Image (cartoon, rainbow, N blue to C red; front, side):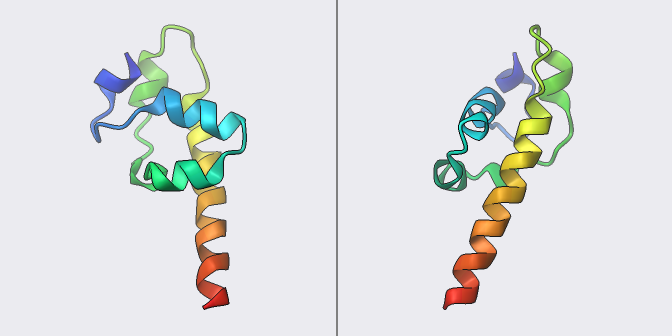
Length: 73
C-alpha cells in the first residue's frame, strides 16, 4: 500500500528495511533523498510501521555521506 500511496513513485518499505540495517550506500543509489516526506506511506501502512522515521534517518545519513565525499574532493 505504501508504494501505491507514494506520490513520488518510491518504495518506502524498501527504504525502511535498508535504513534499519544501516545500508546507506544502497539508499543513496536508490535516491532516498527524492522522498518529499509527505507521510502518505506511513498513513496507509496497514502494519503501522514507522516508515517515515526510517526514511528521515536514511536521508540524514546519506546527506552526511555526500557531504563527506564532497569535502574530500
